[in-house]
Length: 189
Ligand SMILES: [Ca+2]
Image (cartoon, rainbow, N blue to C red; front, side, top):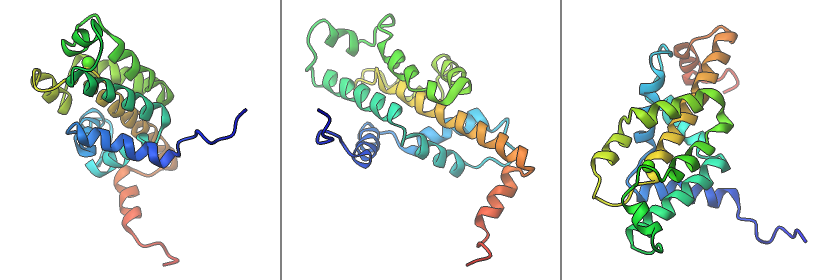
């Protein structure tokens, strides 16, 4: 019978997700910088704060939260040598044919549509920002899942921004104007 007793509140999951990223040395700004790099060619007046905001919003999505919690947990257990053989060795060595890290991360981007999927594919091939930092820091902790999860969050946030830009275009305002309007006190204040 469904009693709701075993339900974890969304806020708890959101907090745990952000804490897991911070614990692994990843800030929202780190991810936002990737979003900025991916989207600035298409967005006149795009600001890093917009990208941070977009990252913050996609991190409220359960699909992403669950992927992040599962992936980071596996990285951490592998780091502590707590996985059983042969999975322990496969995760630690970030074996090229493993692919489950990418599958989990990719599974979380579908909710943001085709722009998120193609951005994820691009980031998988062209590691930029903190994804590249993690890649070059190999041997310094296990980040087999983390790099793909960051690509996933960045792709979703980039797609969200792209769609927002389209909405603004249709409303006849640019990012610059929208930002300026946001900074203005509302007439009722
Ligand atoms: Ca990986």
